Image: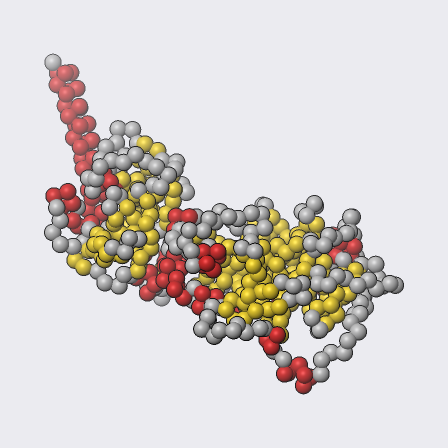
Length: 510
């Protein structure tokens, strides 16, 4: 498989919608202007000046001037991307930080040299969203070609001194008016706060997003930090989702604003006065007066890891199915995370279905009624070009009919070559339960459908009451009931057609 490449993108000019990308390994950090930029008289016109960055002096380049943009000025809100080129650090001025993203090499389209300017600073276009969004790739080799703008006046640190100090890099963001930092080592991407599927909202989990075919659970950061499950999720145009690698899976944190990527000396991190809080690594005191709490994300999420991992594997178990190249046999790798996890739903009372049997969960909109249909399946949906029957589980298990509401959801499942949508009142939660029990004798209402309820689990509900929940067997439902019902309908239709033909024949004879 072709290795994806990692890029960091920045907004060069918001008015003209110009977005510039750099190879992520070239960017050592991204920060706001610290302490102002000191002008250097007699320098090249695109050198804005120098900026003090901790113990270093960084030349700052006005990219708008360098690339011939008009107007070429920046506001105090401008950001500086610190890049490393031939062991020298430079600052590139941008209006804002956009995101960090990965793309496959075939999405990078080199610009024909005949169509480039003389300096060839923009070397390629990156198709981030084909047909919608392309980002220009900045080539540092050509950007600095023929320029001698190393205006750093300080001697490089002595080798023995450099070995004594260690440095770490952090992504700094704001949430609820406070600044936090997480290690760059666990940061995977920074993406826009796209539409979050709130079907799985429970506790600190705000829902999930689809990112390149994978389900990424999204954390309500304020709920996580305050240990509260009643916070209102509020996002705006500055909000971002920071994708992190935590507990062997990917998880997203909703943040108010990505401020910078910064490098700090480990010995400059202030320890907390108490040692029993392993959720934080320490505090960073910054030149602008802001204090940044450095987080240990793995410890922060340890109490929620099962729900996060379970959600991260919803709909992704299909990716584990593959065909053996030698035998042609299909094998499936089972994840222990999903083996004993259940999706709890309600149809007047709580039921469960194994997570590994769930393809996806969608809203119950765009439902179409089938004329003349009866029974538990009277409606269908168009699921990406496939007509999928809806099984109303209230009717199937003979519960009282309830008026449809916004909480109604469709659980999409497949078995025996048939895809169905199970209509339920609401999604309750995702629950892990290692042990299950054989279903005892059922009452008259459910006895005829016992084959679809062949086990039960114990579920601790939100009222801290331990209840027995029946587990739906989708394979038995489709094999023994849906296909049987379809066959019965076809037989009934055939019998009716034959009866009509016989009647017409008798009438003709008369």
